[in-house]
Length: 104
Length: 244
Image 1: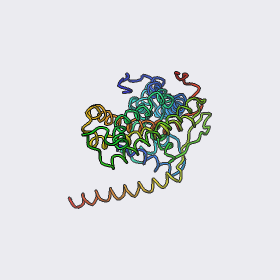
Image 2: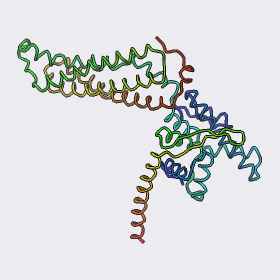
Image 3: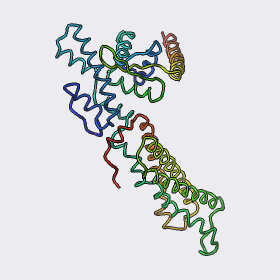
């Protein structure tokens, strides 16, 4: 399932647990959602670079197994945005749940 | 689809990267390649660990990267292309100061009526409010011309990212001011120069076109300025010299 436009929020949520690199971010999102939230991995990097441009995350390179990896980290601004988006999502999903419960 | 060209599906990672980063500045290409290559290698290793043959593992890792055209569009949204990089340098050649001159064609007769009342007998003077607004627009036209002179002097300097960003910001401001002037001259023109047929026929459509052009160009300059933040000084040396 591809929730259009939700990828940046999913990335911010993943990085709220600590710094991470692109491949692991993609795998963790898929695993945590038990494969429900699926996306093409080539679109992950434009989203990561866009978040970095907005200063919601920062990146730095580390050498891992002899190869350079770029790790991403949530900034304070990114944390605030995530808190706001989480609240909005809870409000939205609460409203939808309420409607479904009323209907059943 | 990149600029209307849908490329054939890539057969390997090199082709995927070539299509995804087509026309991007060198620093962007290098950074994207570095990350996607590391991602691909890890993805292939993971498929091999699940017992797949190497060719199958590579094909699956490539498929997981997804539609290269969609990725290319997204990367172009984040990074400068070689064409956009030279844009601030080309600004003076398509500068809004020339648009201001078109507005003067519409605005000057209104002011001239006030400055030389009674010269053209039989033509009703416009309301004094149009004199004030058109004078304001004329003042803004001078601001646009001054801003463009500044952009011109900046364009003579040795290129640096700071200079290019400043040029992009100044040109965005001058285009947006031109949009405002064009709106004013349209409003003033509609009410004030109705009896003056040449101004009505030529001036008003020209002002209307300028409003759309100026807002579009202002937005474009701001977009390029945002993307200039992702470029590096090495990208400047990779560009062909700007035409005189």
